[in-house]
Length: 97
Image 1 (cartoon, rainbow, N blue to C red):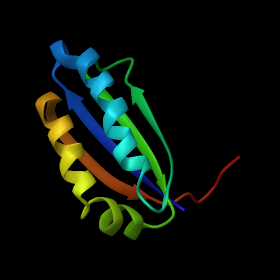
Image 2: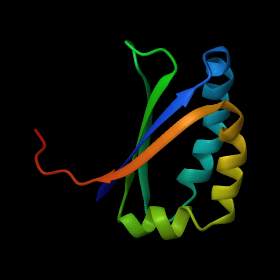
Image 3: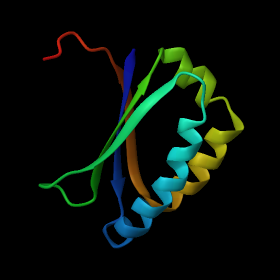
Image 4: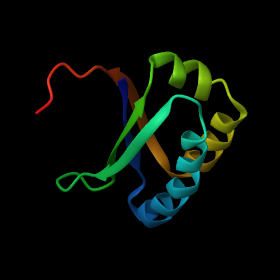
């Protein structure tokens, strides 16, 4: 299992709309083979900063399965109106308690 870690910086006046749109966008992610789970987390200290963690079977599940799918284009179309900036990377868990 790997974790996709994304940071979305959302226009402050559009945060509520973003959270609603993300519910629909998340269904596109969840429909992808290799998807396990996800969380959407909002920073307490930095208004407009969101952390998204998606668990995938493999990096390929995300990069090939989702990012090269028609669902990804729909995801981007849903998210673009809200984004100031986005970052993404893949993580592997080394220790868990």
